[in-house]
Image (tube, rainbow, N blue to C red; front, side, top):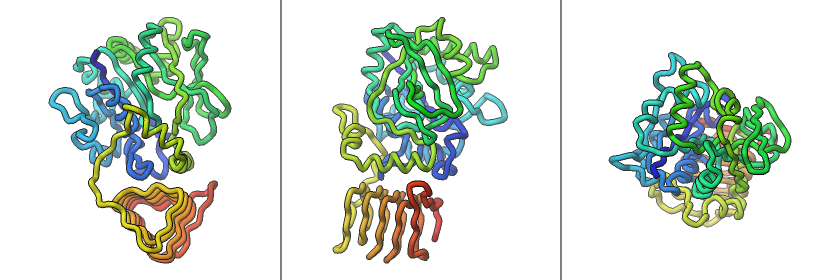
Length: 370
């Protein structure tokens, strides 16, 4: 069975927040050494999906740098492998929906030798087992299988939210799409499985009828015609859609149970680009508690409840608490940081103290000097 993977690297303008203004949501750094796309890619590779297209929109230079040839995911292949799919053929404007993106890459889909297609977004932090998903797909003889989760939806979660109603057999009987929603519900995780021929026919119909929304115009209108089933995912699911949610998910990774669930599942590792950096150097007065420290750092101060990315340097008598310091951040001596997010290549050398809180995070832009 041949499977084509399609990953949407950034579809909606709602994905834009401070960290993603100069990069795609897919290449957003997380957890000290990963990017968000690592989860979607690894989930597919762990099910031996070896032909994957990454659908791009804009700001994807950092994504291309991270992916490279795909060798870190065993996707540097003569046949199949990983393919970056820039926008093409929809209109003079960038597309804004998954369906418009699919229209622009229909020739790529047509030319693949796949029997099935897996489609997924990139704002998710989760370790999915596609083996279970496909087993249910075949058992129920579904036309399309949705991955969904039952959860409490807050204002920090990704919007619009697709709320599902299922019958006792697990078949989806109703879909309601809300631009704003709070409360407990069965919510689509924006991951789908279907036959390639079905996807081709749905996209062709959309082209002929000038439809724009994959969920609203196609799936919700075919619930009586197509057998669309839901696969319930009960594991950890991080939903990155704002600076607050980005911060909370990074802080959640400080929990041992969350890290085990994401990164230590048997036969389902999460791969990322290997940098081969030197080990982190800890000074005589370094103090670390409940933190993730990547390789290649120099720590001479105190780090507490924080995520520190590669190449970061923290000076003597400096205190870093409840913060996220991205790659190559430099913090001078005798500085206090609390609830701070620094983007890449930031230098904190002038200000003695930067203090935020849970409701007002301090963010310093890429290459910033303060």
